[in-house]
Length: 214
Ligand SMILES: O=C(O)c1ccccc1N[C@@H]1O[C@H](COP(=O)(O)O)[C@@H](O)[C@H]1O
Image 1 (tube, rainbow, N blue to C red):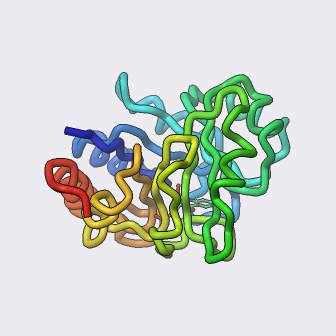
Image 2: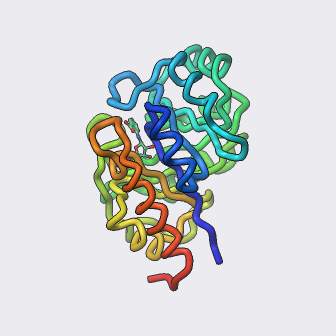
């Protein structure tokens, strides 16, 4: 049985972090992008990350950040993986010497095969995150047409964009991604997670893992 990996993004509070870990999240995302309602300072992220147990991946999310800002963040918090969610190119993403994933902002007409080919051979690339194209780069709670995803993408697919407890099982059965990523779909309010929604989201993924594909 495939075990789809699960990332809960936009952690801003200790209780949300504990709820995600207790529910079985594989990875937690910390947003270093100031316009986001889920933004955390380096100092706050350090406090939160001190609560993350072994074998749960700590992901730092950046959007078109100055390289020096990424380096300063990496120097002060123990990030396992970098998530680039803006217009960064492969050379930029690879320059930090840390494993990374790149977001694609998908909408009709977007050539995902070509986009993946731009990043597929860059050192450190660990996956392609597929999000809906939204104003403001991400965390928009908007789905995209999953039939736009080619089956032969050259990188592990992390499916995101508008996932929530009510649609994640269908998403996993349809796309069979390597991982799913969710932010707003497990929130009680912007930047505040809902422990019950996290439990239901992860249960939806596991239900799909155990069943047939669509
Ligand atoms: O979470 C944010 O606030 C955010 C801000 C800027 C770029 C990306 C952001 N989050 C990522 O967006 C996708 C989709 O989120 P949602 O589940 O639709 O709310 C996800 O990969 C988050 O990691």
